[in-house]
Amino acid sequence: MTLKIISAEDVLFEGEVASVTLPGAKGSFTVLANHASLISTLVPGTINYRAGGEDLSLNVGGGLVDVDNNVVSVCIY
Image 1 (tube, rainbow, N blue to C red):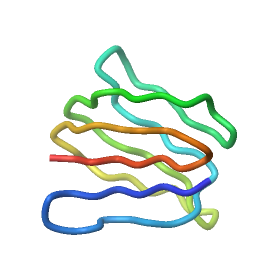
Image 2: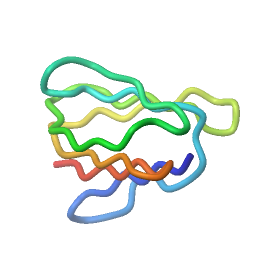
Image 3: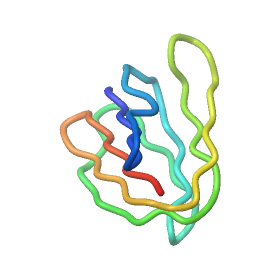
Image 4: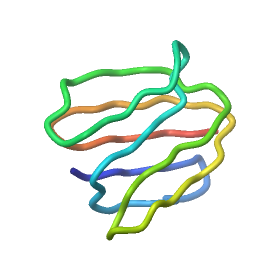
């Protein structure tokens, strides 16, 4: 699946990932390939994702996520 992490200033990451864990407003949740479509707000925390066999993370102050058709689009502040 494709993960896109963007801020108002820049595209921070765009690429294929095996999984992504996000700090949702109702608790942390993980998105895998073929996940159901959803939209959620994000709270301050860490986005963890696995890309190219490597575990990566990014601290965020909050944001929004849209999951649809194996594309996870994250807009952070």
